Structures are given as C-alpha cells and as structure tokens.
Image 1 (cartoon, rainbow, N blue to C red):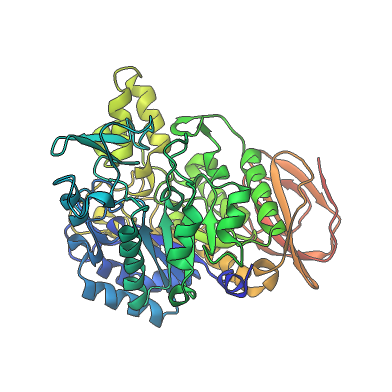
Image 2: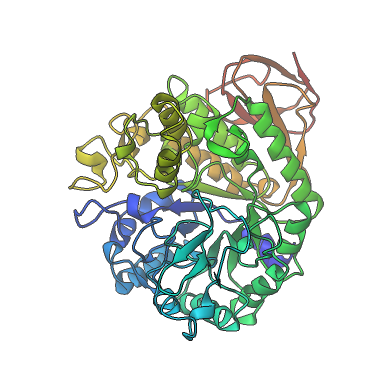
Length: 538
C-alpha cells in the first residue's frame, strides 16, 4: 500500500443514486439540486466522500449506465452549471466527489455508435466490435446472446449488457484517447475520484469463456490512471472476475493502476449458482467466512480494501441477510458494526443508514430495471408467477432504486409528484425523519459507529484479526494498533452465550448492554476497548 492509499483509508463513502435521492423541481425524478439540499444530512452522518451514480446524458435503457454524452449532464438531473454548484457545495463541506466512470460500453444513442453503424468504412466503425457472425457464444448479463444483429450493415455488434449498450473496442487507440479525455475533462472540473463500472471487461479475449480479464487489461488501466495528471485521485474498480492474484496486480501500491476494488464473494452468498433471482439457503456464518477470507488476503498483501453490503445493484442488506421486521433496528446496526469496523473503506448506500428494507410487489409492472424485466420475460412461461415474483422481490436491482424516504408525507418527501418508480412499501414507517427521532435510530447509531471509527487509528490502520475461533453463530474480531485494542462482537440469528476473559469497557452497543459476558440476543452487537482477550462461546 503506498502513502496515497493509506490516506484513502480515512474515507467514508456515501453512494447516491441521483434519480432516486431527492427531487427539487417536482417532476418525480431526483436531481442535482436535490442532492445539494441534503448535503448537510450526509455530512452529519460522518461521511467525507460521495460516490455519484451516472448523471451523464443517457436514454436510460439501463438507468444512466448507457451514456450518450460523457461530458454533459442528463436533462432530468439539471445542467453542468448545477453540477458545478453541487461539487462546490460538497467541497465546502470537505466532501470528495467520486464520479461513476463507464468505460466498457456506451449507449447506442451515443454519436460514436450512431456513426459506427452507418457503414463498414465509417471512421467510427472500429470504436465498437463488429463481425459477420458472432465470434463466440458469450451471453449478455441481461439475458440472451451478447451479439446483436444490425440490418444496416448486415453485421453483429457486441453488447455485454443491454442491446442498447454496445461494447467499446479498446483495441482501437482512438477509443483509448477518447476515454482518457473523459477522465481529464472531469478531473479538470475538480472530481476527486472515479468508481469504474465493470472495468475488468474493457480488455477482451474472444477465445476465452470469460467476457473480461483480457490480456491488455492492466495496460489500459495504467493508461487511464497511471499518468501524473491523475495520480492524486481515488479509483475503485468494479471487477467481478478479480481473484486474489488479479487484485494484487490491479491495486498493488507500485502498480499505478487502481486504489482498490470491490470484491463480491459475500454478496454472492444466498444466490443459487450466482443467480440473484434464485434464493439459496444460507446462514450469516457463510457471509462472515467470506469477509474473513478477504480481510486476511488484503491485509497479508498490504492492499486497500472496500467494505460494503449495499449498492445500486444489490437488495437491501437487512432483508437479505437478517430480519427486516421485528428486529429491523438490531439487524441494521449489527450488520453495520460487523462490516464497517473491519479494515478498509466503508461504502454506505442511500437509505441503508435508516434501515430501509426491500420493496415487495406481485406485479412486474412495478419494476423498471431492464435486467429484472428481461429475466421475467424469459422465465414467465416456464416458472410459476408466484415463484418468479418471489425471486424478483428477493434479488431485483430495483430493491435499491426506489426513492429515498425522507418523511411519511406525500411521496415520502422525495417529490411533490408521483415518482418515476413507486415508493418503498413501508416508507411511512421507515423514513429519515421518523428514524432520526426514534429511540431506536439506525441513523444515530451510524453516527456513533462512524465517529468511533474515526476516533481511533486502530480502526483505520490497525491490525485485523478474526478471533471467532471457528464457532457458529457470531463474528468476533480484533482491531489493534500499538497500545490500543478493540474487540467487535456481532451475534447472528440465534441466542448465543459469549464469555470473554477481558479487561475493558463497552464503547458501543446496539442494545445498551452493560456487561460483555452472558446471553446475546439475535443481532446484538458490542464494541469493547480492552487489553486482553480469550474467547469462549458456548
């Protein structure tokens, strides 16, 4: 880990999905000025960086991840002047801005692709992958073949995702020049970093079974981020295909590639064969084991890691991993403690900090996500409606995309008009106003948790050690540095008896626990500041 990566360990990142965060002009769609309205709320939480999902011009086949102009703002979200005012307001509050960078594909409405599809000898033809017939049997992430026939030139183009998201051909030096220019455009305007969408797919090997991790991947990433002009910015890659060896290459301190990456082993727990729409039985021990594995890998290799349960592609964590009904508060606070006091950079997704639960509907018409709708259409003839909708409610990306619930008022205080997608079913119960004023406030617990993390370098730079001792039903780990030592105890679904031979004090508890030893109720957690630990669980 280089010195810059060590500085990034101080970051706490809050992800905003702009379409669903706050509507300032009453059209039912969140916007940049709505974000400005809520910056103090974010700052108060203890956040010092914001990851903004795409706000660029887009026809929204995939909600902004299909970009038609990388250097302008989506009309529904505002103007470039609004964006400049937004980043100024963030910087006034010492909040960094991390933009979403979609390097693998554009929208089919982008001028490059419109030109590319006109003729085989068009100057933009090689900006994308074209072939007389599919070069392999790759499948689109959103269903069906990754090769789409286009009548205009009687050829096929590659799209790893929606049909309207053609893959860019990074073998073309002009494409590399264009995308480097996109990075420079935003850095010149003050952007502090980028979250890089499916970055490991920008290099292809058409003879491989995998659609990503091609032979020139590291070369391309160094071209983007290894230049002196951008050496100061934070970069995090979405790299689903990354393993331990790859991550060393992607994020090694001397590599000049990425600051860090997301890894997804714990996210895939509960998904049958990796399919988010087919629930699979699991226990939280399975999640813990995935976290322990990667904490050890990243620490042993001195790499910067990320800490997250939720983002714009995932269901709500309390609904997937815990109890979103009678133990909602305990579940939300235990999961936060379990995740965010580990070693790495916390990433919080909008609404997670108030314990937002999954949306639930038996009507596919309530969903907007292209992946979800494609899955429904592909399976509705051979899977029962009840089973199909149960899986969709479990895993749909729309679970995280319903409007943020600010109050119990009309449309949850998100907008004065009907939102682009329905409000969460429980918004009158679960909203920011109600939660902040509750005796059991998830938001206020998050504030305490993040303040505790910030207060001690043991949580930022300290050693991580799993001390659960292969017992079931809990996660107990240690964070220590010099003379400071903390023990984090997170109990899972069932009651557990936990005894610690310890000298210390409880500095955080989600149940106002006064004694560390004894019976722990489901989803109870404590943080101890201590000097000696011997753990025995019965």
